[in-house]
Image (cartoon, rainbow, N blue to C red; front, side):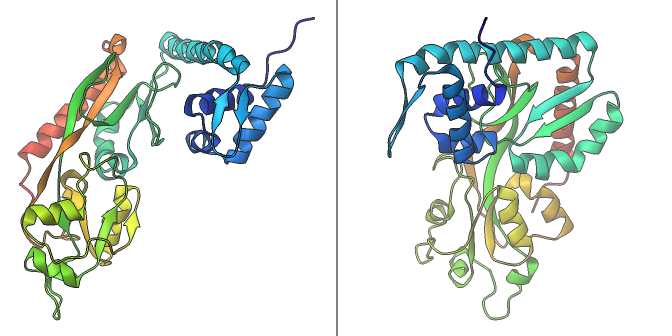
Length: 309
């Protein structure tokens, strides 16, 4: 009698943990606890009757059996994703699954999403903000927005939003009677709000880099609360908790409404940008083409709008 297929959740936990060689990072991707991942892997090992990982206090590695088993499991998940995608195409399921950075979804897409819904009532957007980079070979997403340099082998990539950052704050801070904000040097009297969604120094300039460009050396950039994702630091600035270094497109509406102001000029261009990506073989998918055309229309609309001050 053949041995039954192991539980799918246990196989998933094994695949993710093997890819990261970390129960903690696997837990982050799966939105569970590390102990839950460990338990699922243990269940799989008991089901198979063989150890898949070598565990010690500082590292996690695959056994010979684990290394032999992993490619087949990954291929199985890849086939499941492909079969699901093909089923949706066959049935004409009108949903479009997109993975986005959290603040891109909150500050750019959602405020204008009604226009897409009105233009394409037959397409239901399914938005996800999973932190891990989407792997289209094993995850059931149609498109994604990635923050990077735009080079992604095997994927169509189109620039969506270039990035520049500058200081913003509540109007009340500019008008502060004791320490009004007039020049960058005045920041030494105010709380700096830090965006912790930084990938590296190139991708998202921090306060230290911005002040160095501004020629200011007497501001302590080590102090102040930190936030992730980026829209939390913007919310803190709106609430008057301090001055934030924000991406231009994330604060456009808040600047237009007067909820935020730029206390002084001076911005930094960022090497990274936001790109729309999807597998090259899906270029003729009408749902993807409809969304991409709509994004282009929105960017053209933004370009024609009044410049932010």
